[in-house]
Amino acid sequence: KRILATQRSAQMSLPLKWEFPGGKLEPGEKEEECILREIREELQLNIEIIDRLMPSIYHYPNFSIRLIPFIASYVEGEIVLAEHVHFRWLEKSMLLALDWAAADLPIVKDLVKSKYV
Image 1 (cartoon, rainbow, N blue to C red):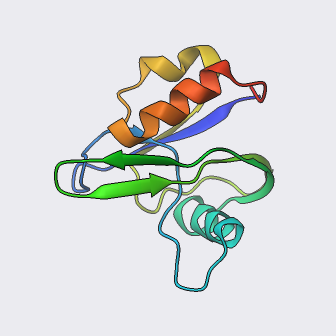
Image 2 (cartoon, rainbow, N blue to C red; image 1 turned 90 degrees about the vertical axis):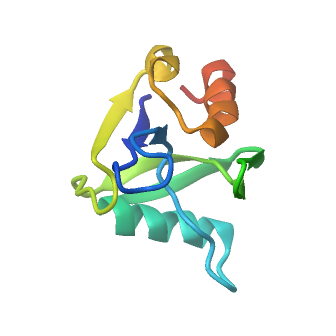
């Protein structure tokens, strides 16, 4: 019943902002395949998808992003950070305390109201 958040490195765009781990959809890849691959690549974790939430589109000044959030459960592995500087397992009540990337905020707010956590 906790939520995994990762903190972007100082060298990444949106430095030191918190986000939900994930990544870019590869050509021909299904959304579910993408999140499973990205979590393995970025965190060395295997997860099981439980549900897909409503996508969120956010327009930054220099680019736009479409986030496709999933609810998943941990299966196995120990977190090894490949791109991020920190991670935290959070209770729902702690979500709004972090300095989130703007694109992730609508998802944070949805999770705070959700039945999943």
